[in-house]
Length: 202
Image 1: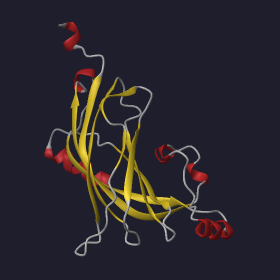
Image 2: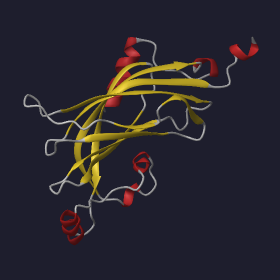
Image 3: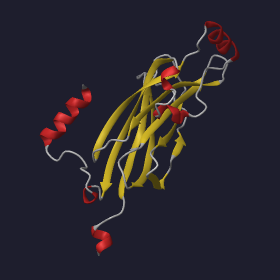
Image 4: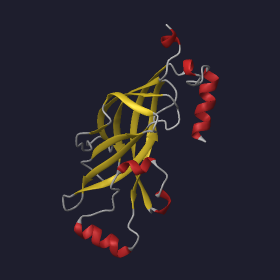
């Protein structure tokens, strides 16, 4: 009885989907995803990484639609290192080589319920014009060896990047035992939700 009333961990359950993307200059793209989280976190069920199907724009819309499912549960003793979702979008260049079209990351929402996030994407840029030309000629764009660096601060300040496109992700978040461990799982009143949304926009 004592164990159930005083849990040693809390759970964060993530369901949702990578809905789609907006890349005006590109088509026939696919998306890879993975999670980055702190030392106190561990996945208990679900997939830590995955890859969507290739999708193309329809004649009616300029959006790329994936609707690729996300499902994972984490356990932790500490909110520090709250998980982030990292997405990388790839597609063919003029020579048919797969090249990166964008990197982006967002924290998993902190409060239970339905959430939608629009993630700004970016690509690393060559330092010199000669690198840019040879990269285009050989079909090799600058890429991160590990996309997880996108969610980490170390070394990011020395990388030249260019904004390019957006990816939309929807989340349904559930938590268990956070309040029992002394952590506030989020605002309980509509006014608090509204003020949180306003501060997020700012």
